[in-house]
Picture (cartoon, rainbow, N blue to C red):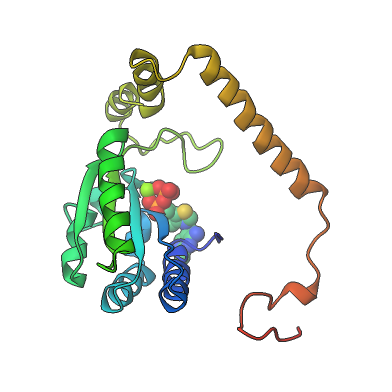
Length: 215
Ligand SMILES: Cc1ncc(C[n+]2csc(CCOP(=O)(O)OP(=O)(O)O)c2C)c(N)n1
Ligand SMILES: [Mg+2]
């Protein structure tokens, strides 16, 4: 629904959305994604606690790409697995190979079903690797080259592409058409954003309170 530049800020927003679903009984499940670095932010811990206490329909998905800006995982995080932290909040925590679509799908399906049936939240940690620098032009001098090259060999995108073709689920032409379609959608969205006027002050408090308050 939303994102902000504040690391970890999506979690409490997700808890708010899940609370809304819980109150309205609309059958929706909120999925909130964040990084390994975000799991060291206070909002992560507050969100997991409240979501578990209220048995909210939410799935916490941590993409553990082993780097937070220029800090390697082991230099910033005490837990061996981020999923281990779920135990402290009385919810299941599962670590999956985030580069494996089937393993990831199985974990997400179980977590969504649990949330939808009133069982409460799950923390899913999908382990992967960061192939790009933190910003464009980041030379990534803090990353071990050997580790990087090895991780690149396990790049899930070409692997999934090969798997889809091998199983006869998609042809190269279909995949190329899909890529072209996605690129066009992204370009269209960028164009729409750059050509749109800036929002006015009247939008400042939109969707903040139940009753709109004029700015
Ligand atoms: C509260 C806050 N602190 C610091 C930053 C600066 N910052 C931007 S991205 C980032 C690292 C985030 O790491 P991670 O959660 O692992 O996400 P990834 O970049 O790997 O997707 C930091 C520290 C920020 N945006 N917000
Ligand atoms: Mg990270």
